[in-house]
Length: 128
Length: 158
Image 1 (tube, rainbow over the protein chains, first blue to last red):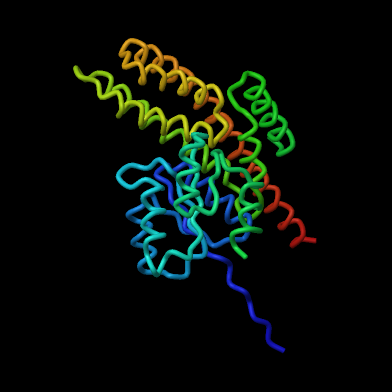
Image 2 (image 1 turned 90 degrees about the vertical axis):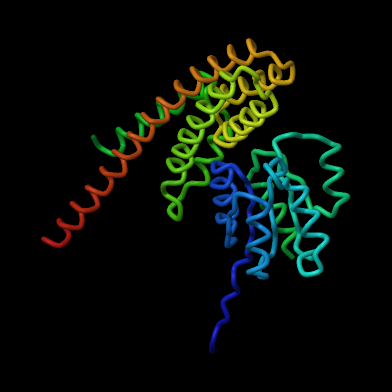
């Protein structure tokens, strides 16, 4: 009898901070996700154009040139990408910013530093 | 030195860093993320933080030397350092960055320079302790590897 291995869900993590990329990557991998990390929204869009097998995008809000909010908008405006859940992260707990992102279609908004419990919550909700 | 003694030394150092307010519970979160699938996670993140922090502090000094300081740019760098400090649990550095950002908002060059001195001192203090921690972790890994090899040899011989 053959068994089919279910592939790990693939998360694209976007953060201009090398430290934060290492931490979020480890958090997601410890929850059994396959993770690709990039350092900019521009690079994220390049990856998304090449690999449609992305199950979730998790992005920092404050990034130079293209913010996480800009990336969110680009994803939600794209017919090919709009179904991919996008989660924003920020060290600033700004209700205005959070509301703006959720209204634009973000699945969730996490306050940094992100905890394992935040990732577990995402897994059970977003990745169904 | 035996692995057990090195573990005690490591624990004493880290506990002291917590007691002195250098670290907060985020560092414990990082320790909990380290396991057999990522045995070097803490040392990797700490090394990244130390290198990145050094880069940012040098850049802050350079920016504040300019005749016309771009406070938004300075604030952006401080924001980066604050973020990475928070991510590794570097509590003191993170809190000083919060003060630093206030001086950026006030466009106070003097305030920024004084706080840069403070953040530099705190960062280098933390970095030296992190480096001591990494040395102990390396020695512990070597000791464990040595013991594993000795045990394997003994098993082969018997």
